[in-house]
Image 1 (cartoon, protein in one colour):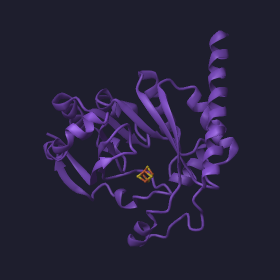
Image 2 (image 1 turned 45 degrees about the vertical axis):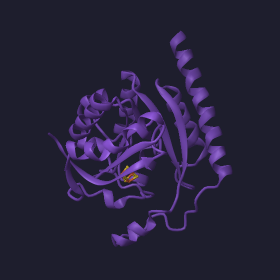
Image 3 (image 1 turned 180 degrees about the vertical axis):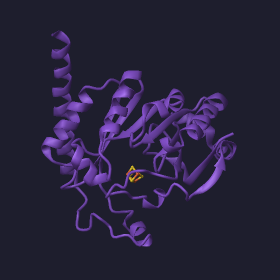
Image 4 (image 1 turned 90 degrees about the vertical axis):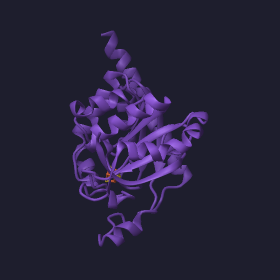
Length: 252
Ligand code: SF4
């Protein structure tokens, strides 16, 4: 039985996938996003070691709530694909025992070959596409985005359902060209059921301070509803362009 490094858990999550969900936060992440609200989840050696059976016992009392609400189990982080064998075993057990829906909330910073067994047990991937240009992505997250975009295309090719997410950070991820490009990329993917624009928030700033780190987005304001709506329109326009591009390419 696999053991996972656990950051924390939540028994009544409502924002990370459909319905009411058990949300498991895993420890460890290879990115360092400037807006991260869980920088305490980065360290791969921290967290609490727990077995799959331990976690199943945490889920069990609430299974009926999850099922009746059309919910299930979401594993997030940190970056859950860093502990792919543990998550795969947990998801398989949730399906076999209770027929629960499973969702993986990932940055996509993962080699597809490393996650195949996990993806076989995953009903939905919540995929964060943080920025489309390579160098801008590196400046925002410490890593380029090639691997992430490759992972997104792999999900599309294997028919995995996706919700794509964009954290809207003024001055960092909200440029018109950037949002159009994001839309075009999404328009070329299969299996995208939903696109969510998540307004950047400052609720995790205190954790940076607790860790003795300077907060890298000091002075950046949270976007308002008009900015979120504008971003949604630009991404939507990009998606239409991306789909047309696909159709035309297909006819040639
Ligand atoms: S991928 Fe998620 S957990 Fe990792 S640094 Fe970025 S926001 Fe934080």
